[in-house]
Length: 433
Image (cartoon, rainbow, N blue to C red; front, side, top):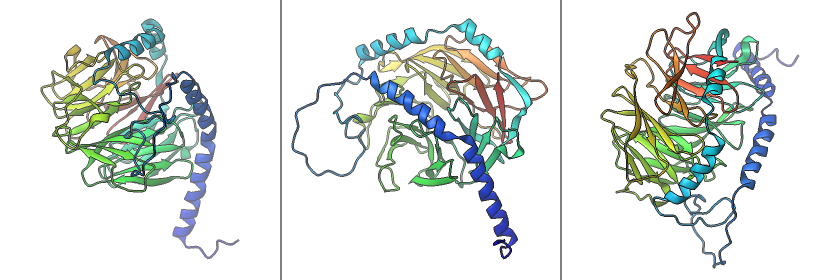
């Protein structure tokens, strides 16, 4: 039969390869890729074209990202804007606010329709969940989870077989941040302390993009094509990584004056701005003006007296920021106009004392609802809470029979009513209609 001479190990390896191929083929990610490409094309059609500048003589330059060269993907140079483009940002905020004015009553009804059942709980990774990402597909519920030992688990929730989940070990340290590529839904980028990798989930291959000994902490894409990313370091620095270059080192590394940088997040509209959360610092920086040292923030979000676990822009307009702090408070800031100093718009008392055995809470915005965010809870019975940006508690997800642990890390589907919570034992809990 051609396999009789193989050892038991080789036979098992061949079986695993075959099972993985069937699993990824069943996901039909090429359909999602076509769908997302149509969405991206529609978005680009609304971009206002700027007049092309006069041509100048080209000079040979070192290969650098288009973002750092201040060039748009269309090839048109970026217009220099002041550090605080208030009029432009207010205009975008007003236009988008009309589109996503919240119907809170309808939104709360959709939250109430999402329930947790026993078949939608699965141990996907071996240990504590440190990060998660959910695939944007409308036909397949594919969730990725990274744990503290470097494992990445992929779970096809709609699969009824026991082989709906597969686990890989592309990292040696905790997987602290993951994102599916916005332009290629078959690519899952994962970040651990020492490396950033791009996993092709259709081939189960995790290629290394960047390596550093400075302990990476988080990353976010600087462009919709996912070619460049801003990466935070545990020692406080931030770096720019260009996936198109062959070098394993970051293209640019700068000191922003933080002792630690736990999370970084790029503004959803004005991609030149990114948000960094550190020890007690939360600041907005303009990537176009970064220098190796002595970088001044565009805006500082004040009020934190203990370490900050996370900070994220609201998903559509970026007009709000939500932070989680060890001082047991959630803070919401109005970033419609980036003044030099911003104070909290509302403050929510929230027990964030997760201790050493749980991953620290991160408050994440619902991508379908500009004004609401999701965060784990230490309260009994165990639950996941949804707050409005006014500070009002809108809904608590819980199930007395199926949810008995703290879900520190959560992720919300961008198009469907689906919420996934990950706990300290590697289990994922899916609330859905």
